[in-house]
Amino acid sequence: MAGSGLPSLGRVKLTDLVPSDGLPSDSYKISVSILSQSLAQFSAVIIQFPASDGALLRSSLESARLYFHQRETYPPADIIHTSESREWCKTSGYYADPHLWQETYDYRPGLTPSEPNNSIEFPPAGLPDIFALFGKAARDILDAISYHLNLRSSPFVEILDNVPLRNREISSSVLSVCCHARPSFQGPQHHNITTQEDGPLIMYPDHDHQVDKSLLSLVKSDRAGLHVRDFQGRWILVDGDLGPQEAIVYPGLALYQATAGYVNPALHKTEINMEANMYGRCSLAFKLLPKSMTNLDCSEMRVAGYGIEAQFQLPVPVDDFMQRSHPTDHLFNRPSLQCFNFQPTHDGSMKTLMRRRKQNPKSKPLPPSKRLRLEAQRVLKERVQDIADKKGIKLRFCNLKECESHIHSVDSPCANIRMEIGWPLGVPFVHPHDLPNKAKLGFLEAYEPGWTEAHQNSDRLVNTRLTLTVTLLLQVSCTYDKIVVVYLKPRIYIFFSG
Image (cartoon, rainbow, N blue to C red; front, top):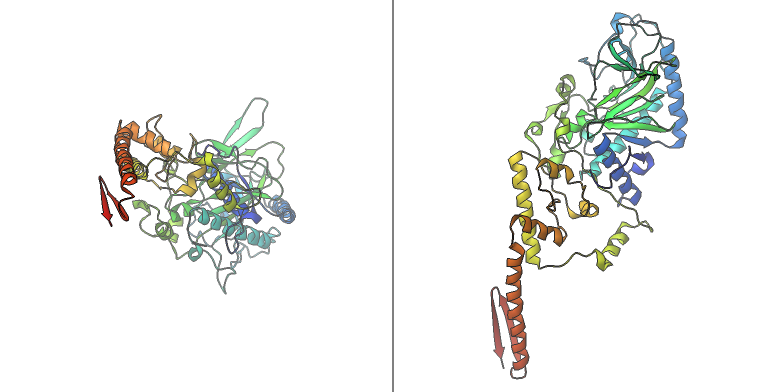
C-alpha cells in the first residue's frame, strides 16, 4: 500500500461524504481518500453518523436484546432456515439458524412478515427509522466509491430500489436484526470453541469466514466481535472501539461484480465471548442489495476506461448471482481499489496548493530535453505492459494527479503491481505518467546502459551547431536586412535577403 497508508481502520464522518453540486470540497476529497484507503487496506471503514443518531442506534439495539430474550428456547422447525434460501429477496420476520447459533429478524419494507400460527408478534422497535438511516448512508458511500473510481454520478441507480418505493414494490435491501449465541437459545450447535489460559471462552462458527452478496453492508453491534480479513490476510477486529454513533461498512460480492473486481469484498467472521453474556451479541445489519430482475454488468467501468477481464464481460442476472455460491479463494490475488491522498490546504483551496507547488523551484525536476522525457515515457510504459502481459496481470495506468503525492515513496500505490510482476530491485518504478526525470533516466539506464549518454551526445552536437550558427549570424548581421534560420533535424538552414 501507499507509504502514507492508514495505521488503523479509517474513520469518516457521514456528513463529509454527502455530495453537493459544483466542485468537490476539500473535506469531501479527503474523506473519499480515507474511505478508499481503508477499503483497500482493511476491506472495511468506520462511518460516523451525526451525534443525534446515536440515541436511535442505542435504543434499537436495546429493543433487539429484549426482543430475542423473550423468544422461546428452541424455534419451531418451520422458521428454521439457512442463508442459502432461494427466496433471497422475500425474507421477512423471524428466522433461526441453530447451526450458526444465530437468530435473525428481517425487516423488508413492502413485505409483511407472516407468523406460523397466525399470531400477532411485535417486531423490535425503530426498524423503519434505522432502515432509512442506513439506506441513505449506504447510497452516499456508494456514490463516494464511484467518485473515487472516476465513474459518473450515481452509476448504480438502475439496479437499486426506487426512493421512496412505489406502490406494491418490495424492497430488495434488507435490515437484519441479529442475535448470536443467546444463552437461552438451544439447538444442535456446531462451533469451534477456544480458550486461553486465564482468558475468556471464545466461540467461532464452523464456517471460517463469510462473504455478503450485497453491494455494501453496514453493521452496528452492541459488543465487539466482528473480524474482517485485510489485504495481507490478517484478521482484524474492526468493531473493538466503536462510538455510540459509529458503524462498520464493508463491500460485498455484488459490488465486486459490478466494478469488474476493482473493489474486493470483505471476508468476515464473528467471535462471541461466552462469559458474562446474558443476551448474546446483538447487531443491526443493513445490506444494500441490487434489485431482482436486473443485471450486474461492468458497463460503467468500461466507459470509464477500465480493463475488463473475461469473467466480467457478460452481464449476470441478479437472481442467478444471489442464488449461486461464490468461491473466495481468488479474491486476494487481484488488484484492488487503489487509494490516493488529498492533503488539505491552510486556506481550504486545493488550487492554491497546486499553484504553490508550481512556484516552488525546489519541487521542479531536472529538465532534460523533451525528446528524452517522451522516449523514457514510451519505453517505461512498454516495459511495464510487456511484463504484465506475460504474467497475465491487469494494469490500470493512473495519471499524474492521482499519484503525484506518492512518486518519491518507496512503498507507493504501485508497490503491489511491482511485486507481482517481479520488478528488479533498485530500478525506479511507478505507473507510466509524467515521471520525475531522474526516475526516467534511472529506468532507461537500467535496461539500456549508455542510452542517456548516446542521446545527450546527440543533443551536444546540435547545441554546438547552433552555437556556431549564432556566432556566424552575429558576424554577418550588419550586411543583410533579413536573416531566416530553419532547423530541420539534423541540418540547419540559413536564408539571407537584402
